[in-house]
Length: 283
Image 1 (spheres, one colour):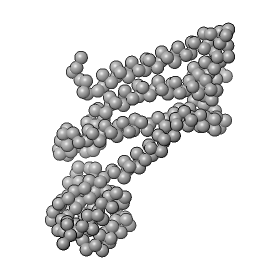
Image 2 (image 1 turned 30 degrees about the vertical axis):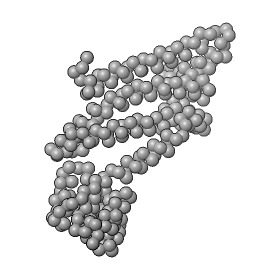
Image 3 (image 1 turned 60 degrees about the vertical axis):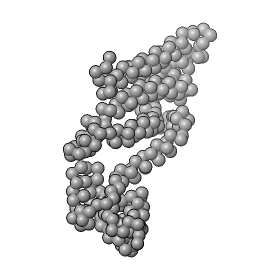
Image 4 (image 1 turned 90 degrees about the vertical axis):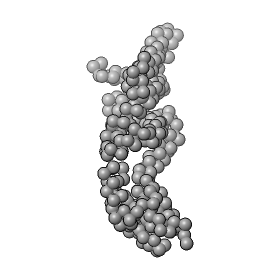
């Protein structure tokens, strides 16, 4: 007799990937399989046939397990067909989470500054690189690699918070996932987002100044009415050429960069104290 003979396992998100492997492992040990996914397709039929070949009952249900109402309906349907649920494996969202984290690993492994230099040099003469004197290309290059660290920080914070009692209470009273995310998770991770942004903006300002100093940042505008005439990095490059006769041409933009970096750091600290719900009522 197999270890799980007579047991019923409900596995959400078992249409493919990790969930499918878990379902087949339970079937191998004799458990009947009830599985759910947002879409049932040929993978679902294949899982049912493979589980049936192991001598167990297997049935798929179309359901969004991240929704409380859909989860309740799913459990009722499974109990109606199998009379009981002995094992529950909530695999919903794992596949998407793994894909996102692997993407962040790939982007995180590439040196930021080297990526900026490659993008600016390669696309500088294209229409995208010439639009707004290269400002759009610069912002795009900075944005492509700047989200990975905050994505990891937010993911870790959410994984910690989703196990808290107030999140479980929201689920128990039937609050939809969107409301839980907007009213419970977001206010509690807002502090870490603000603090990281406060430190990341100065880093991006310094990066832009470095690119401008190397001569591959924004082009100086030929029109004096342009919104961005030039960058501090370009001004420092011009000042470096006249360092012996006009030292202030180099010092002035360098001091401006330092002051703005300090200002954003202090601003982020103040915003964290203002928006973090854990700081409410404290002085």
